[in-house]
Image 1 (cartoon, rainbow, N blue to C red):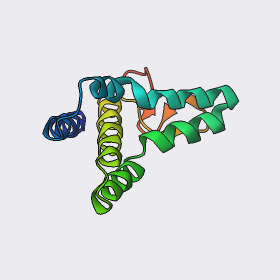
Image 2: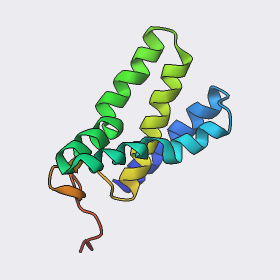
Image 3: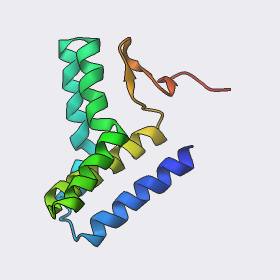
Image 4: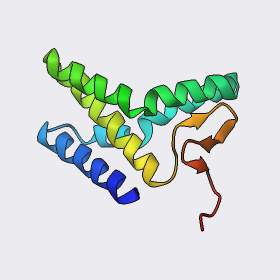
Length: 115
């Protein structure tokens, strides 16, 4: 699964290069969507909801498609950045969050060793 996510991350980088996106957008790819973690200030349920909105690939694909349907390059690039970031997170076992707390994801508990 990690190789699949790495391939999707690579595809997002390719599309950013294809659209000739400025270098600072790469920084958004790495850090931007994690601003959603501020939702945890409001508790684990609010935090999980905020985090999942910015990291859910279904929502991200809808944003990319909206950018293509209404020729809106900025919307398309925002979707590509979110998609790449979500793939990168999943490479490192950071999945969508459950309401139990930040370390509980749809991929398991962050930081536990898998045998």
